[in-house]
Image (tube, rainbow over all chains, first blue to last red):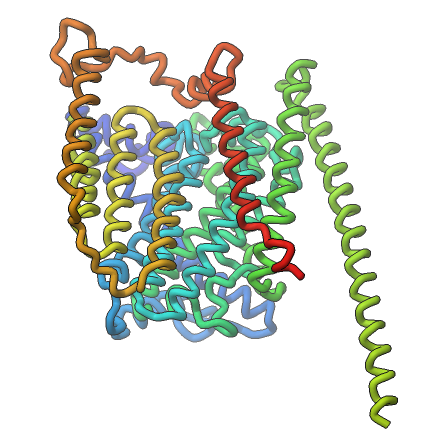
Length: 419
Length: 181
């Protein structure tokens, strides 16, 4: 079979349907296909690290008024990441004295493994997904909670007090921000009536961002913290507190942590797009059929890639512009602001949506009305939140000013006594 | 065939790691092995078509309880010298107790309330759970928990218990008035 015949077939079927038709349905075929699928998705995710690592360096450099990589592989330094990886591979691997070798080496592997496992439930295009679990989003949450273990292993295995302190700090941050993240992703699940990632996309003729902008923002902030990105990059913060849990890692073992971090960021951007920006859907572009060719699959993939790139750009933009939080500010922000707000949002969505179902304003042409009502409720809650915050800021400022005035008065009177 | 392989891998992980947990001298490695044991149990849940339970197992046992255990070990022991003797005077009693529990569970599943049809070989035949139940496990689980004709009262009781425990934890950790002043 030549390429010209193969191409339309691939668009109609999946590659796997094609291979099944060639190989027949012997029991080993499914196993081989599964292995091919796993290798393809993981390799794809790992290759993205090259692309996005370079993009990030270039974009950050431009935002900081620098040029960035400009030597390796041409004017724009396209091969900079290749050079970086070669550098990491050839570096000496130093294992600290007294390290717990099992924990020390399990940590980077576990870290990369959990990041790659997440991609199993990401819908890349219509019908193109690793496995459409009916508990897809819950699977993501449980896998990312396992990644916390990797940090503890790294911190403990290194036999270094700074690494251990860094690991404690990281675990405190990740466990805290898991809570608002779970609570905020419950809102699209409730709206879609499905925990499957495909179900989420299918339920979004109108992106859920317009139903629940507040939850979307909370999810975005929590995913910044979960991936350890600025302004929540206390996991690393190499300029102030030693690089955290991976202080003692060198060469490619450190490279695995870095790859895991980037893959996590890509996945979180893609999950944000899937849950709130209707994933691979864009005005029916994902279902385009041209001259009998199902172009929709390719277009859908380009759509989700483009949306994810925009979110990733936001990640970089925030990293380049916002300063870092302190650990107490970070935990207070998570527990005292994001968690209560997302609980309120869940209650409102549950009650409102139940009422809308009873009234019969869900689905079909009524979807716009449903969206409008949810949006208005979100705006009201947002306004109330800002009002409460403003009042509290006012009292805090008054207290502070009174304190400062008292201090000034004391300072004025003190020299008088001295004279 | 695939189910058997999954089951064998899952049970080797669960039992082998469990054996390491009780015989290892290093508490930290014991906690790690406990995690692998939990993972094996999750694999068995998966082979039983209970995806929700498997994910919950990962989230709660590996993501939360194991981390709690590791924190407890790190904060209470001298970290790098945890070489405890895994056997003490109670180990025979413990062995007897676990064998008894195993015997009771085994006989209950195989002889007293068999899940398989009555004329088939125990533990070898397909369980008598309807395929329709397996199709939509999450939906069924959800409506069984909070449906009016389901288990809503036990579910709410468990929630209240958890809430009370949480409030209690906050009260215990609350700074006492003399500390604040």
